[in-house]
Image 1 (spheres, rainbow, N blue to C red):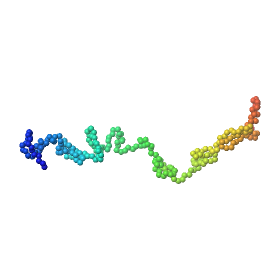
Image 2 (cartoon, helix red, strand yellow):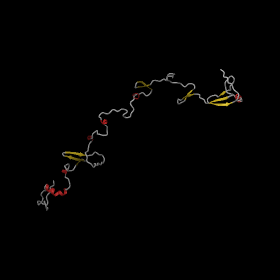
Image 3 (spheres, one colour):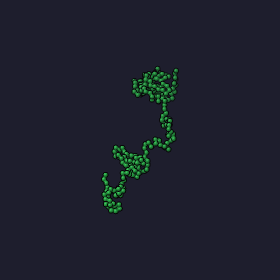
Length: 248
């Protein structure tokens, strides 16, 4: 180790013992100007000293306990401390439940309350619908076999024939027609109109069939009033009284 020797000087603290080693006090006195405002290594992690740095960890010492503040960041990060005093808390320090004055007492119970369908605006449970929803068959006829019990009947179904006292199937018979949409209507419906008129006949036409001719009345058969007969009645005097005899 190198030895620091004295030198000749004047003024306070001057020494005449040239070449003698300096004491610790003499070294502090001579080098105080160089060390002013700087901290020594023994002030690291000490009271009123400075935080030490070890392997990129900031040492925080409290008495005989030294804690470390480090980072596992993989890219550059910036941490800004808020301008307020406070105590850092970990997840373990945060309670799992917090009081809330605006929450009803029943909502804070340890046992979950039982809600009804009306409480949440839902439709009440229908046993029939629940039974139908549980069916696994997909093809067949839905049949209720008992109270709240439904089955899928996969057998062939035969519609019974309708009768005067029971429902059933009917067939389209004479005078009826059914279209592709299943609409049943009277078949052969026709529109009639007056056709050719003569002195003795009137023809009635049909939109779907053959025209019919109506003849004049005779002594033996009813019919139309002919033009000749009409003229005879038209020429009778107004003062003539007619006697109508109705036979049996």
